[in-house]
Length: 134
Image (cartoon, rainbow, N blue to C red; front, side, top):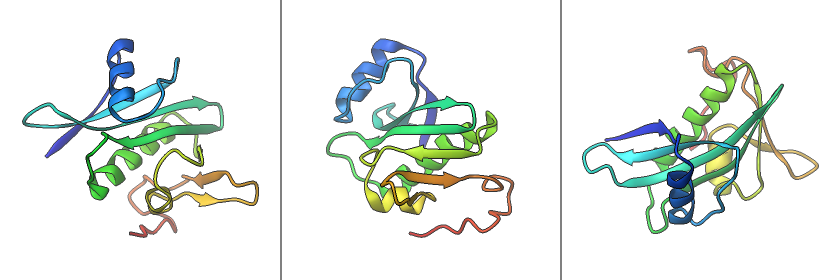
């Protein structure tokens, strides 16, 4: 089992960013995914919310760790938070995560080579045309 929690400490966010092989994003929200028993880091997400859009810059497992299903849940939890904040559309950096993961959580690559997802109805319990593609 694991748990996903907000990272509210800048130094911890910097540490986790390093452990996940990415850069610390100053001013961004961040979630940590940790093992529920040991507290060990499994992965993290860094993201921001700006009006109509959320933006995921990083959805990364800890270096050397691999669990697709856990990362899927971290991605969807991040998107759900963005949606709950009133931003029903989301973009992701081209290198935010593995392409398979981004597509599985609902992103599509547009003609400008930007991953986008319209999350309207995605988290209301009905999926409204948002099938999961594993």
